[in-house]
Image (tube, rainbow, N blue to C red; front, side, top):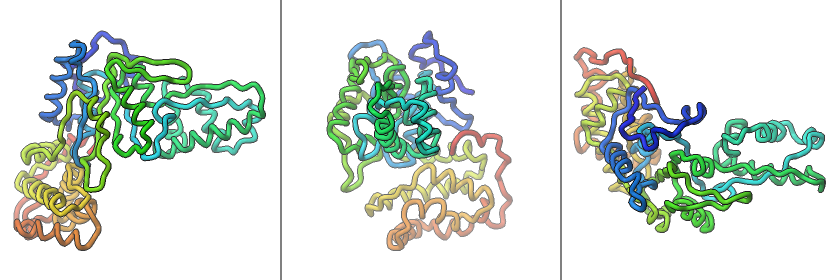
Length: 381
């Protein structure tokens, strides 16, 4: 476990055992980027400077450029619990602040369908540490958007089964409120997809350094340790840009691109244990060429670091470099035949398709393998 106390923001702050588990632990394969160093130093330097404090950070770039990995690394560096919310188009204010749910009496609860019973019991038995959405995601094994929809259905269901009696109501905070009130590092993924202006206004208000959130039960103030890391994909033609008011509340922004070739190779070695620099250099060249070609031809998919890691891992495991190029990289970018042809031509222009044919199972033909058994396949690829 790597500890980076030089960047801790509140070293004297006690965390509960549950909160300690939320502080991200860097795997041995993690390589510190320039963006990580820069943000960590800037936030630490300005942490006690009042209006100059940096507590809202924007990471904007293509899918697979390392935005979420960087957000998690900041959790480790700052010593703050990490959590996230993934935004979706039809978010409403209850998804931002939480929801009030009637507590169905036990005799009425028996009349409810078994699935709803299990979810409601999980909610009623919760200790308030988890948000309602995360409880539903865990209980039902669904996405955040599906959990939000289910919560709205449960609210209507609960109202029907209270029979007009005196009802006990409980407020279930959102993941945003939980992080906001308790001082966590919250990754807000893709807020640019939100359609409802009122939802964006609520989010904008919360991100003020001295902001607050009006809950049905109380007004809560922003915890001094709360950090919002907004991660969003770079806009493509026709995509909705990030709300300007939200962008204006950011104190530090990073443009996330593919890292340099040397860094790509170093990270792939750490992730996969594969050590043939010549082959890795060839794979990295292909990823960079495909990334540039996709941009130049308005192909919406991206060739990012995830594709590079999984492609490297396939080659290290014995797959043909050229064959695995398709199912590890190209088909993740697009399955359109014309677009694939464009990408193939870009590789051929640089002689890479021919060179990749000479790599079978991570070994240049007629050469000995240079892969070493990995002890560093830790963490997420």
